[in-house]
Amino acid sequence: MAGAEAMSKGTLYGVGVGPGDPELMTVKAWRIVSMAKVIAYLSANGGESTARKIAAPFVAEDVEEMAIDVPMKVERAPAMAAYDESAERIATKLDQGQDVVMLCEGDPFFYGSFIYVFERLASKFTTVIVPGVTSITAAAAEMGRPLCMRDDVLKVLPATLPADRLREELMTAQSAAIIKVGRHFGKVKTILSALDLYSQAIAIENATHEGQRIRKVGEIVEDALPYFTTIIVRA
Amino acid sequence: MAGAEAMSKGTLYGVGVGPGDPELMTVKAWRIVSMAKVIAYLSANGGESTARKIAAPFVAEDVEEMAIDVPMKVERAPAMAAYDESAERIATKLDQGQDVVMLCEGDPFFYGSFIYVFERLASKFTTVIVPGVTSITAAAAEMGRPLCMRDDVLKVLPATLPADRLREELMTAQSAAIIKVGRHFGKVKTILSALDLYSQAIAIENATHEGQRIRKVGEIVEDALPYFTTIIVRA
Image (cartoon, rainbow over all chains, first blue to last red):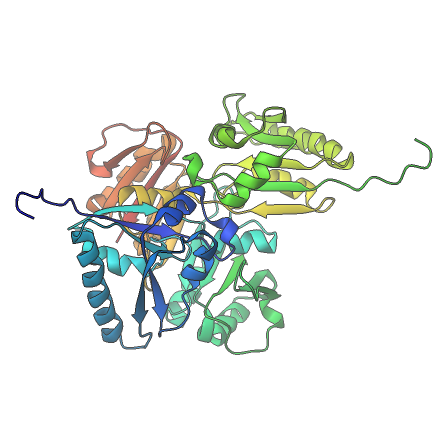
């Protein structure tokens, strides 16, 4: 249209939806998600999106959805290409003046895949981050066991780290949350045993989700656990 | 009353109210707080309770309030005596069959004073913990800066730790959140300078509260900052 004003750009929202129970979404996340016209979320290997499932009770019926299909492989190139492509699709929406609300399991800036999208778009668009409850404090709550107090050093340790690094960090932590345990459980179990930490280590699968399960590490015979397993160790 | 049934005991709720913005309370916290008949909260040195202030929009008008006045001193005995006394007051309510909802800034099990009450009562009463958004992910969100990703080791370091310990832990962290900075800022600043981490260290005072302030550590001339100051360091 001749004489039309330049459209203002949309805002990118990174919204933490918490660890699993929809009631653990914040009031702010609820407000933003329920008013969203366009939502985006990760779909690992084209499967169901956990974040989308958590937010389901709050999503409007006529919302436009953008699933970001990320191939999860050991090589990183396919995932990075998927983020490049998704960032472009999101940028197109934002350039058209539409807001895009990306749903993030847990907290967007706490080991979140949202960070890959944020890195590609934050310099060009206004971004708003809504923090969420992380899996580690949700795990402690479900276990009925304090995570850290007083002068405790708390370490968050991805189970993907080399065994030596995990061992060293565990030796000097008052409290540790080992995340992304999945297929690395065997390695983690060996380290915990060597450090005589069996009795203080508790594993939780799918915290606050369907299928939640809490067990002492010393009682688990499997060599692999679900990806969303967190082990809390208190020295 | 003769023949009265034994009253069932009340439940103790530890409810995280998040970092400061009332909208960062979870839907679950909102539900439990708004239905509470008895609430309890910490009042450091008899001053205003931050948790009470955060939850204010959701508290019922006719609620019964129990302020736990904790003397904050270097010696720990007066605080421990205050927790003993408060736990007894809360236990009396629970024994009468009334639920007690304790409001906790951030998350109840993440460096929370609630833990002192929990330790005194959890063996005798049913407890329910509602996790909350912590100050560290709220700080990252407000800074617009990811806290941790991929295989990062994240360390949460109370600024009250000895300088040597802080230095060693910082040297091997990809990401660190230094909490409870307050009067320890001078010590922390010296360590960050020695490790050449000035340019990657950002301080936030009163995250998501009134009086929020974000500055690079290298630009701060004061030797002390508010207690609720968090410094995020990314290697």
